[in-house]
Image 1 (tube, rainbow, N blue to C red):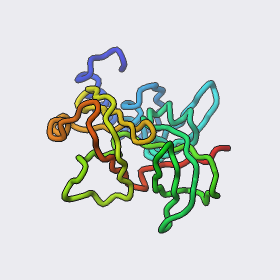
Image 2 (cartoon, rainbow, N blue to C red; image 1 turned 30 degrees about the vertical axis):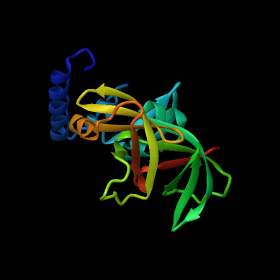
Image 3 (tube, rainbow, N blue to C red; image 1 turned 135 degrees about the horizontal axis):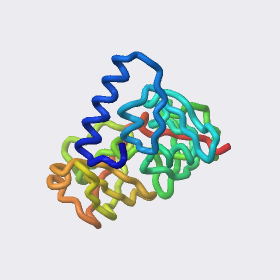
Image 4 (cartoon, rainbow, N blue to C red; image 1 turned 120 degrees about the vertical axis):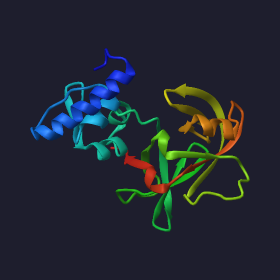
Length: 200
């Protein structure tokens, strides 16, 4: 479908998905396109350099990649190394650059364990500092906008939060927050949205 214009591709993906469901026949779709995998897949296998690296539900593979290669293949926007530095209220504390995050870990992590920290850009919300109604998520990171780039119907905001971080926002949010390089913001991330992979 990659040779088609975006509106036609979107319509065909929807139609193909409906036909595949109606046929109730197992189907193998090979794609390099994240949107196609999300739209057409129930289960996904990520193959890199001829080797199966991860297999599971679309949701699991896209939100919980098993290694840096899979994270890159499924286009996780923020993939950085951090170090486990303790527990707090059942959550794992992780030092990343000059910041500390709270995450839900799948494994018990010893203090000092190196972990890959994966955060999807759509899981990062932005606020202006000193907002009167702060959001409830556990992670509130002081950050500075480093770049603002249109990306289809959304806008990708690159941030320096003590480590490189990306967020996707809508155009109305961009205007409302008056974002531009150098603007101070608070990046808000729920603890379960941060995926940790221990270094092997």
